[in-house]
Image (cartoon, rainbow, N blue to C red; front, top):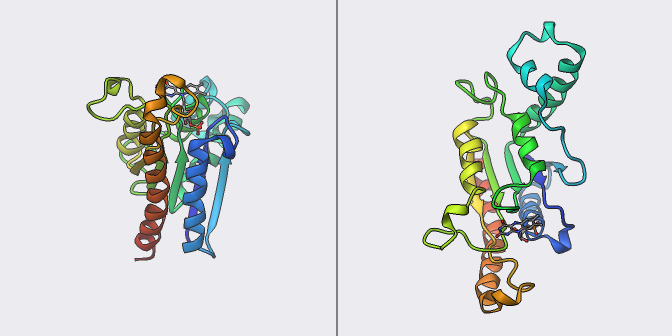
Length: 216
Ligand SMILES: Cc1cc2nc3c(=O)[nH]c(=O)nc-3n(C[C@H](O)[C@H](O)[C@H](O)COP(=O)(O)O)c2cc1C
């Protein structure tokens, strides 16, 4: 039975969040394909994970038997998050663009799960796990757009999760989501609507493809 690790990081509730709406659609299609499957859910906005501090970082480089109480507690939290990732057959992440990059709560999760010698480096304990990332953004940052160089969500998550952890990263990108609220973007509303519709179609198609791939 397949396990999906579903992580959201938008500060908004589902009815006001582009990324949560699409991750929820993906998850619903996933569950239709895997009625017996398990979904492990993490809402990083509601329950943030700790930021990496010196104890949590240094604990990864010394024998656990020599951990101080502070290192042991911080490391146990990291291992809990790492095991969740390692045990997942697939991962779904809502990663809205906040000031050109990912929410700090999601960055904290990434910092916890990148552990040289286990998830990263030569071993890459979650290597090959498929990860679908819903990268919503108020503007547009695709190739050829004026703001292409300000795109630090897909660029960063590809570096950290695909290159760093060896995960099989795929993106769904609902863009121009600010168009309905921003009068200066009024003429972009049709493009926003097309992007939103495409994101929901991709969520359905990718959840189904993933189910078939994991069943094969
Ligand atoms: C704190 C904050 C910062 C944002 N910064 C950007 C930005 O740099 N570029 C952009 O295109 N949109 C930006 N936006 C708009 C969001 O990317 C957009 O509303 C997106 O749909 C967010 O996804 P969500 O609704 O799931 O949170 C920002 C929104 C917030 C709340």
